[in-house]
Image (spheres, rainbow, N blue to C red):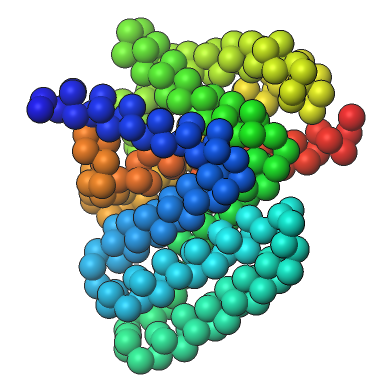
Length: 276
């Protein structure tokens, strides 16, 4: 199978799994967020520490990510007791992580602990918030993913066609300002279409102007999320975060924008609902 065919097949399956989980409902989104959290933290541990940390610490970090993701996800669930239970468990995990370091590293202990904590904040926390966003409306969750994908598509189409001015050459030499505006145009068009198509379901969340603002914000934060992951990879000298997705690299290569767009969506919708 050629690389293009492999990449296309992987992309179709990836999108299919995400859309299927969103349509499934809260349980589907929860399972998706837990899967992404576990895989993402595993990859982050490898690329940030370059295989220096013992396997026990990697497993321990994954457990912490699952606890944090699950605890945040349960905030609006029918089991309110679950949130304090899992968050208390995560606090125990945090103290345990620092104690474990006493027995593994004589040097760079602070760096190792900071890397573990960074994975929790960078990956597990946003994926926990994904479940709260889904409580607003599963249509909004689906739209959020579509906007991210359209931003990438628009940036690639426009950037590869007329891109001349580098957006952030130090981090990502191929990105252009033309591609950035192209991706944003795709997001704005999609947001306008979504307002009218979903008027009976999610259109009452916010007026049209706020939808357009949301599309602009998603485009900007999706780009920043991509650039931050590129910065991390460039810092450690690797091209892909992993190889779990044939033709696409690692899971962090696919959810880098999502990790920034989810907190943005949570903040944006919360503020808008308080205003209108």
